[in-house]
Length: 88
Image (cartoon, rainbow, N blue to C red; front, side, top):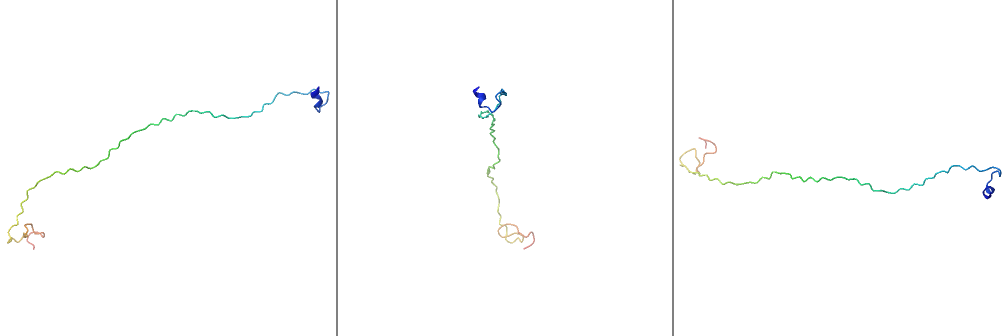
């Protein structure tokens, strides 16, 4: 009765009770989800060509003949005339 007394409705009417309404207050909580990323390490060895020089001694026997000074096609040091045969 006390409740009806504060209502501004007519005193002869009974109030209608509606079904309750829902009001949502959402909050969020983080949850870890594991993601697996396989990492493959590939060790690569590259071959590069590096020259390595070997020196093989070769012995040659050479005869140096100074020749005769009276021959017209030869130089005094024993070599041939750089201009060919017959020229001076």
